[in-house]
Length: 265
Image 1 (cartoon, rainbow, N blue to C red):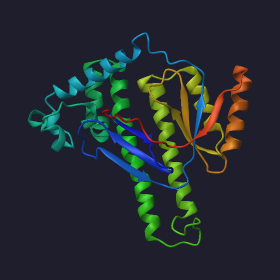
Image 2 (tube, one colour):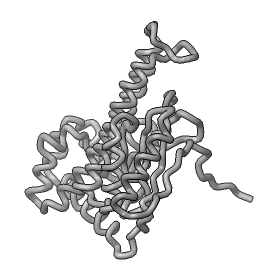
Image 3 (cartoon, rainbow, N blue to C red):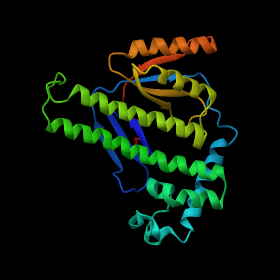
């Protein structure tokens, strides 16, 4: 499974992929103008009932249906899937292209199982695709901007303000789509997370996009906010939360920092 993470340097996104995958295992994407705000719902993570294990079991079931099917060699990205028996690592949903899911594989999973298995598998496949699309949005914007010369440029004279805004708008939309998929398909959100995300999205002038963080079932949302508008966004978000819940949530601007690492001593 793929994940988009804040990285160890300011204005960077880290794309992290587990196991082997057609895309790089670890890559930093540098992009200016990114400002993140974390909003804590105060809802404790509710994983004690084994719900996450249930979600994983549905995903494995979807994987097994595709893996054991006779049409594995027929998918568009057959160079990945048709070599299943010759590979040194297991087949997983990350190996399924989103086009193949929409054309045939998704219907096959639904027909041979149930709606829950279909929904969970759909989330994994489409979430991975959103990561790849997010990468393309940022890298193509950087390449295009650096090659062109416009009158509207940032202080360092290299990045167009309009191009930055367009790329961040697209990136934020993908974040919001990710939350909707978590809410509706994977179902690892909760009422508080959905409310916090919805309140953030209502501030269209200041917020590009918003999604739950981590495993969901409580905790925080992460919000991509227009640079320089963080305080205004935080104030508006807190007011909306107070009106519904009667208390002020912890909302603060955050910056990427050094990730956790292991050391031998």
